[in-house]
Amino acid sequence: MQMGQTFMNLIILLITLLLIINVVVATSSTPKSFKLSKIDSSLSNLNRGGDALSSSSSPLLNTLKKGWEANKGHLSAAALARGFSIFCMFPVDTIKTRMQMGQTFSFDGLFNGVGSSLLGQIPYGVLTFGGYEIYKSKFTSMFPLAPSLPVYIAAAVAGDMTGSGWLVPSEVVKQNVQGGNYVSAGEAARSIFKSKGVGGFYQGYVSNCFRDVPFRVFQMVSYEYVKDVMVKAKVKRMEKRGEKGSIGVGLSSGEAAIAGAIAGSFSAGITTPLDVMKSKMMTGQVSGGYLGALKYVVENEGKRALFKGAVPRVGLIGPSVAIFFVVYEGVKNKFS
Image 1: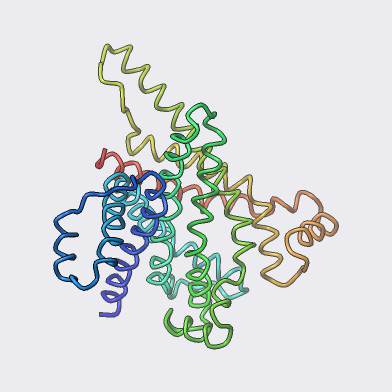
Image 2: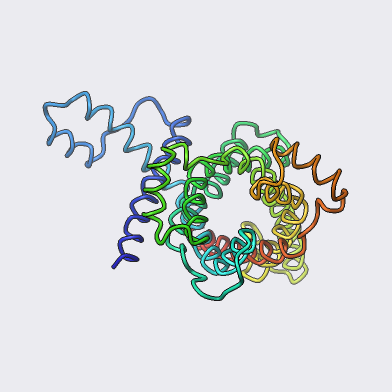
């Protein structure tokens, strides 16, 4: 019953987030004049005394509809892919969190907190990855002569910054449940709000963005380039076989897994120093933010220590990203 209620809340939140992201992106290109739809006319008839409200809601409804129709493939793919990849790798994430907190290894309760995690991660995936595709499309249309690299980077930064506003509070709740500090996400949320207020849910927002934005940039840029190379090679093979219709060729599930694994492993490995510094700050070994952590590690442990734990980090993130892009490309292709 509780799980069913959780997923109902998740659906409501997803719909809300989809509306928000489409309003933000679609408004900039929506004409000033709008035609009233049948729905708008019905609303107007039901609210004859509120003409001003009805007239202002008409552009909003049309904008939401236009945004959804234009981007439903990206947004749906992001939601499903994020949810599936997080669920598959959640036990590994739980073990990692418990190790960081110094707890004894145990197989018990490996899925504790999975509901609250999905409640945070699926909307985050919609906002970050769905947003990435939307921002990329907008930036490309705004700057048609710009090279692809800065467009990918700008879209990745914008997408991750958008998603982090939702992710950080859910991560604060999730980690407290995973660590055994609270029995449920509801209990954790109530306790955090009571003791620290709204700000308690955004502890670590800046450090989270400082770590995740570079990761997202490396991930999306490397995936775009690997995907581009693989698609071009695929088109060449098709042309050699005399096949036509190479326009719009995408990646198969296996190809998406390979591209995702390469992108995930590369981005995880190259951003390991940021993860090491974050762990130092989380355990209270250093102060002064990332610069203080960097100075501490280099002076006390040497430069090589910045890549300590790179192998298990790549082992966790690589498969997760591979799973994500398999689902992501598959759902996107269904809508295309």
